[in-house]
Image (cartoon, rainbow, N blue to C red; front, side, top):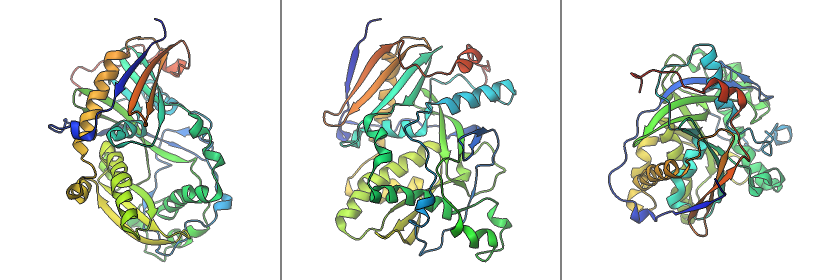
Amino acid sequence: MESSVISLTVPSAAELRGPFPSYHQPKEILSFSLDDERQVHYDDRGLSCYFPAPIGTCLFDRADTFKARDVTKNEHIDNILQALVHAKRSKTLPGFRQPQFVTFRGIMTKILYLPYNSREEWELGATRYNGTIYLEERLTERRLQEPFRNRQQKLLMYSGYRFETMSTVPVEPDQLSGADDPVVRDRSHLDTNNCAEFNSLFKTRLGKHSILMGAEVDCVSHGLHKKDRTDRYLELKTSRILTSRQGEENFERHKLLKFYLQSFLAGIPRIILGFRDDDGYLRQLQAFKTLEIPRLVRSKGFWEPVACFQFADRFLSWLTAHITVDDPTTSYTIRYTPQTKTVELIYLGHHENFLIPEFVSEFSTWPENPSAT
């Protein structure tokens, strides 16, 4: 097949009307942890519990000790693929039908946000193997420049990770004696890094499209016993404190939409938002119920979730129709240009393939389970 380019114009939100496509409650099928060295462990060691950060905490503290993940190193979707291989070999992979798509939640969030995205370009890689389409994020020039941000930009990025450090503890909240418990009181001396993380791998369905999605999880709030339920998790976010009408509109128009999409996709019911001032001090905590967020902005006409999910349903159908070469050694590029509101699908042939050999070998056929959903 020769190199080819197929284009799709993203319709305006006003054109995306109609019923909300069905979206199944996500169900966790497995999880894994990454340590400070990005080594994978198939256990819950990376999962922390929520315990509120004290108001007045400086989220810029200890920035000089921050251990940052190397964002110039593309990990592709290796961790998802390796987790599936591990689960299959250890016979812990639960039965379910082979998915049509395998990807990370962040990539699905980008797709859902497209009807309202007029500023952010991105690039994905895609490969079709045995009927399943695998999607990864590609390292664009903009992404490669992230480590070279100015000091203020780095501090703002760091403050989000610092908020997570100051808002979590490594044990169940009901095992703590309160704010004076040493585990809670001594959090301020902890260094922050974004290398260690906990990941949930869950299955869901959007319209007719079955999806297996990986998602980094910030913390748990309901205990560790509901192992297949993503509603035990919490999202932790930060934002500048809202001091102007313009700032409030920008927050509700863009940030709140992304927060909603990200949490809704994974079935996470609550978002804890820390508002900081310009000096990095935590000034306010606010909890949002994910399902109630659209009502907060509906009267303002900033966005409608149905437009996002209508488009994503169509987009996945478009990918299915045009990613036709079924070969793990070939790939496509999917590129979004916000200036023209256009997505391009480019067939690359035997270049930039990203499925790891052990996965290709192990999943030449998926486990059969016709009764699974």
